[in-house]
Amino acid sequence: MTDFMTRARAAEQAMRSVFPATPLQRNAHLSDRYGADIWLKREDLSPVRSYKIRGAFNAMRKQQGQELFVCASAGNHAQGVAYMCKHLGVKGVIFMPVTTPQQKIQKTRIFGGENIEIHLTGDYFDDTLASAQAWCAEQGGHFLSPFDDVDVIEGQASLAVEIEAQLGGVPDHVVLPVGGGGMSSGVASWFGERSHCLFVEPAGGACLRAALAAGHPVALDHVDTFVDGAAVGRIGEKPFELLRNRHLSDVLVLSEDRICTTMIEMLNVEGIVLEPAGALAVEAVGDIQSFVRGKTVVCVTSGGNFDFERLPEVKERAQRYSGVKKYFILRLPQRPGALKEFLGILGPEDDIARFEYMKKSARNFGSVLIGIETRKPENFMRLFAHLDDAGFTYTDITEDETLAQFVI
Image 1 (cartoon, one colour):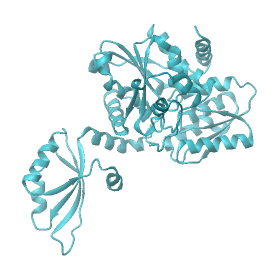
Image 2 (cartoon, one colour):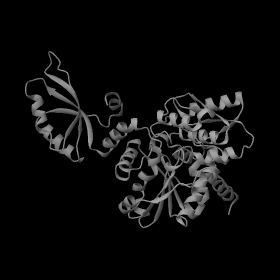
Image 3 (cartoon, rainbow, N blue to C red):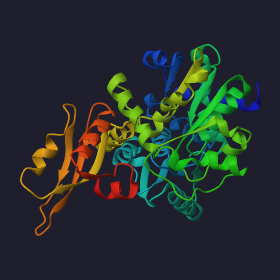
Image 4 (cartoon, rainbow, N blue to C red):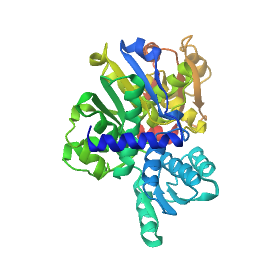
């Protein structure tokens, strides 16, 4: 056993005084779908509904006598630090992006109570991180990195210690969301060559892939904050040192809209609430099904801190990605009966979800913004064919990101 594994095991044993091991559950639905033995490591069932409490616990327990801790977080690390501040009776100053979902801000306040104060600053995590580090340097205290800290990485690796104990052995494959790399590098270091680790990133925050391609951590030009638990613009230096020899082929990048389909499915089919980052590993199995068939696969559902006010957006993204919802601009003749003619073209499974039209004076045609939901993607082929036959002019704007962001 390596020194790292010894420290990770010690962290796992020590944290049992604070919270129990999270469940490792076999998922029959996914196992049947992919012809594999699929297990979910339910970090969404930790006391703070994410694995981040592990790193916070381990780093803070090693700072005996420290009375002030400072951190920056998009939400989950903040909750872990807040929980431990209250548990240990110490003060915490927590910096969070202004764009952090209210659910995560409120839960952080609940977990920390009077032991913490929250500063909202910056639109992106990297701006928030810089503010937190500057404040800590000026005011003092111990800075708790969400991922770029050896003690945090050891604490996150306790997740892998539990997996091996609960499974009674080592899985063939472990699917890990990345973010800043603390958990993924810790788990990968624990398993080493004994298990094949796959790393999953959102398209708008693929910092590990960028770092592996460059040979060193690099700052992304743009970060999409939708997958807030994994929307990091630059992977941590220390995690990257543990991951630098990984192959690019082991890094999977998923679109934000695609991730939404798994969030909706897991909620509707399994009753499991996952945040976007928590759904990454589950959705990625679809990309590797050809070589996991018959194998044992563990997917880490890294978090379940989901603000249900975001559910309409998640559903919208999932429907658009699945091809069962489209938006288009229809050029409608301004004459009696034109609208009735269009409505007669709709099929029995087509439903109008949005319709915006204002008659223009002194014009022969008017533009209509229409959103259509249907049960099967192929229904749109029939709809558009009938529109063409009827002589209607239309423009599908579903995939036009600039226009869609403005009108949808």
